[in-house]
Image (cartoon, rainbow, N blue to C red; front, side, top):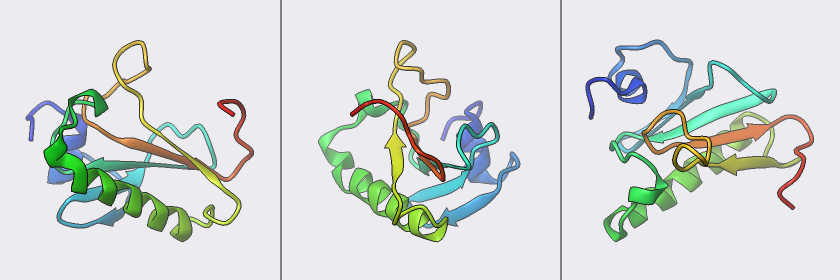
Length: 114
């Protein structure tokens, strides 16, 4: 945990959020600036700055993040129609918070990226 990281603060209960899921490894909460009708952030409790810093020892955690994302997508009613799951890496990749996280986006037709 990092004292100034907003996601670490949310995980510790020091910053507000609309929590949708939490377990010992992962939390999921609504994005405060949604770009889709469903916009949820899937975040590991372990502070990893980005996907570029993931190591072999994080393999099980990364798999668990995807399982949690699928569960949240079902609970939010977007699993059947489809959704986008994306992580931004680094400044040029659009990353704004340097704590690994996935955006689960759904509830509308997504465009691009094949």
